[in-house]
Image 1 (cartoon, rainbow, N blue to C red):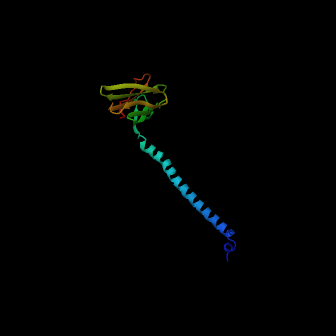
Image 2: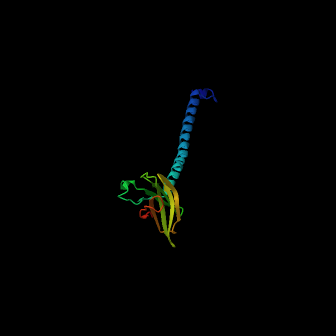
Image 3: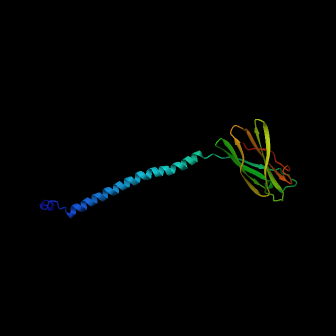
Length: 172
């Protein structure tokens, strides 16, 4: 006769330990399943914004370098000319333009940068900056998609913004 049969209603220590062990194993298994079920959506949710951001990030279209005029008899070498380089991208129905102007000869004269665009009413020129070193332009031009069809850059260097200008360079 076992202890249960001798004393009805009395539970042995072995039965208690077996029940506790079963409860602990079941709890651990349930906890692992719950953690896995919660972790998978969280991992997918964390990856989704990064994927969405990279999918929706506009691609940059680089242009330049566009140089000022070079005088072989006056200038040290071609590499000392001023130049402009940049990029554009399209976002939310607009084209945005960015760029950098570099004056490399350190002759105490400014470098100047111009842009022009073409739309339904013709070409329009705009002077938009000068520097004796380096100047960064963020969103210096913005155009609605379909409202323009050409965008050019010109760099000048000298005592005025009209002196020693290079030719117009196609940026769009």
